[in-house]
Image: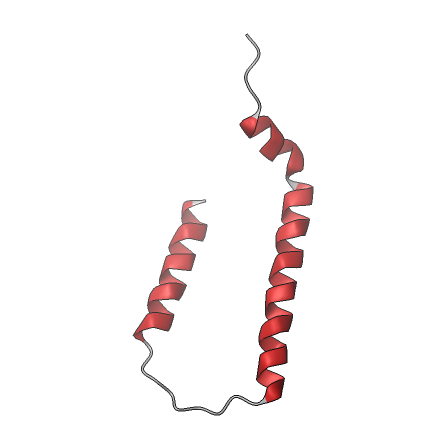
Length: 64
């Protein structure tokens, strides 16, 4: 978990440090961004599906 937070932080810092590029965004760029977002959501869904038992036991009350 710490690795994921570190990687996300590093990515945000890298994106924030880049100066303006004055680049042209064509319609294909918008569809690529949309495709990346949809792919990320699908990946999160698969990770949640495969790790559901561990996630459920994490939030479950311990039996006494």
